[in-house]
Length: 384
Image 1: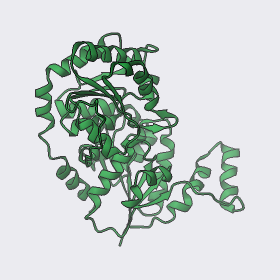
Image 2: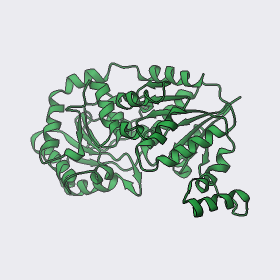
Image 3: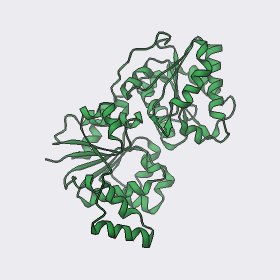
Image 4: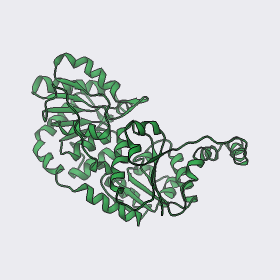
C-alpha cells in the first residue's frame, strides 16, 4: 500500500502553513494510505502545535557523509561549474530515499513558487520524480510572470495534477499543465476552536487586525503601513464603539507579526479598547477571528480564517494570492484588497469604511459555499 508525503512545509510557527497541514490531513483521514508523513523544515514547531498527533513527521534536511563518491562529485560540480544543486540534493537524499514508486507527494507550500528560491522546489520535484512518486502541487498560487520562465514552466508541466487556490494562478498554470484545477485554499475547511477570550474583548464587536513584517518590507512609502494602521485604530476608537483585537498569524523569529502588533498595543493600551493576543495554534486563531465583527489582515491565512467564518474582511496585500482569492469570492478584488505598494495616507480608513458600509452584503456572499466537499472531491481526483 502506498504512502502520502506532504512536503515543502516550512513549519507551524507560520500558522498558515499549519492550517494547510491540518486541513489537508483532515481531508485525507478516510483515504487508504498506509502512512501520512509530513516532511518539515522545523519539526519542533510542528510537535509544539500537535501535528505529530495527526501524522508522522520527518525532518527534511539530514546530515550526510562527506567521505563518499556522491559528495566528491557534488563538490566538484560546485567548484568547477558553480552548480550548487548536487550538494543541495544530498541534504534531502536521506529523507527522500524513503519515497518509492506509487507513493504520492503533495507539495503544500502554497506560494513557494512565488519567491526567490524557486530553484530549490524544482530540485525537490525532480528528486521525487526520480523516485517514481506521483506529484501534486496543492492549493498553490504562482505569479503568472514567473510561469513564463522556461525552466519553471517545464517543471510545472511535470506535476500529475496542480490544484490552484485562485483563478489568476489557475488561468496561468492551465497553459503549462492541462491537469490544473481550481479549488479554494484547503484552509477554508480548517476546524475553528474559540479559546478563552479576555474580559475586554467585545464579542462580535471587534475589529481584528493583523500586520506582518512582510507587508512593511513591501511598502513604497517608508513608515506608511504603521501610520495607516494607527489612523485606522484612531478612527475605530474615536468614531465607533468597537474594540480592536491585534492578532498575530506568524511567529517566526525573522518574520514575527507580534513585533509590529505589540508596538501598536503599547501605544493604545491605555484606551482599554485594544486587546493583544499572544501565540495560539491556527484553529484557536480562527476562533478568535470568528468572534470579530470586521477583520483587516495582511497574512493570507489570517484573512482566509476570516472569510471562511463570514467576517467582512479587508486585505492589505502585496501578491497574486490576495488579489485572486478576493476576486473569486466577490467577483473583483477592487475594494477588498488594498495593495501595500499603493498605500498612502487615509487610504486604509477609506477602504475600511467601504467594508463597513457593505457589511451585510459581504456576510451574505461569504456564507454560501460548501468548501469542504468541493476540495475533498478534487483531492480524490488527484489521488486516483
